[in-house]
Image: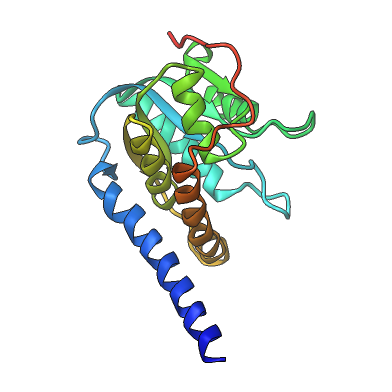
Length: 206
């Protein structure tokens, strides 16, 4: 029993260390203030479902759209690359995000879609290898930006993150629990040089 308890504590310690390491290594690349974030060509919006299980608008989605619009209107990004899941005909995160961006005044001509951003790892690697963009602004909530930037830095990319408004309450704590496990996975992805399931032909933005 003692050995099982010690193994359990060791596992928790490793998870805590991985969580801390991601936050520590990326803290200098995060921005809350739109005035101070450096201007870049590309804003990479990380996808999520438009609606929650109850059919209401997903607040994570809502805030990411608002953040991308604010950056574009402030001249901090020139193009928007939306990367998300389009694994089935009836589920299309990138197109939903594009429609909402256009509805809020972002020109259709500056929005590019990555339909195979099935994970954060896929979105980052495909941004580099398919869209040939290695100097980017990542747009999501802070916890997500930290992990995405950590991946980008590990893949020799230059990245900053603009933190969309976070979500509290039931959405927030459930997401935070999942994030601990996601940070374990991000270390494994880096250590084993994991690649996306799909790459494909190169696409030039702009």
